[in-house]
Image (cartoon, rainbow, N blue to C red; front, top):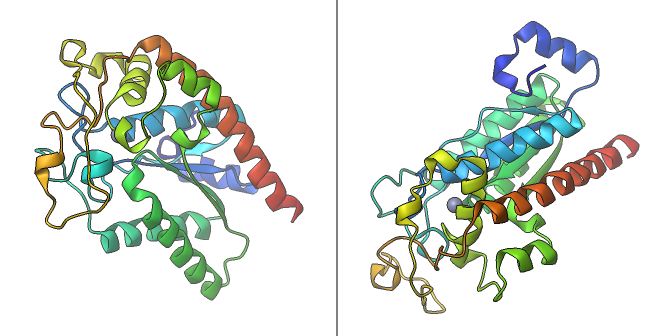
Length: 260
Ligand SMILES: [Zn+2]
């Protein structure tokens, strides 16, 4: 049986809900530059591929991944001024996610995972959850539980050491760098332009933000630190570690829901 929610018929979905509602994982991506070597949809492809593997382990469904996200920020994504970045205002994004959560819950899919692939989405996913829960309570739809996570936060110190033998600079500067490039080499190898993987010093940002963004401190490639240490093997290590760990964490998160 497929793990993809949109490949089921309504009759099949209804039966799944009656049998005990499955967890639904909603991958939250973006359309954002990822250097000269990774596709604009990287932040969607990554969580969508990981979610499929996690869903197979825990009997969950994967909702259609969101292809647009909140605006790329210079210090974590290079900035929204790069060609191809198409993003949503925060209020638009919040309301889109709120509406999806509400309709899933109204149809009995009350166990929802917001599976973030794009750092800039994170607080707006929180706000969408809060507004959705408020609306559902007002309607009398009870028992909704939402888990929000960024897959990168599951990377253990051991995996981090395998990725970065010389130490990690920061996860923000990892945009389109070693971790994402490695995972894409493993998960979506045909989409990586291997001959264009960039080198270069890490971005050096001031400890404040400027609006409009000061593009002078952003590396012209859009990659915030060197990606030359990337490999498919490192990507395999990350995926092999985070998939079972996230699956176990979701089991725990929703088990305590049933007990409570
Ligand atoms: Zn990314």
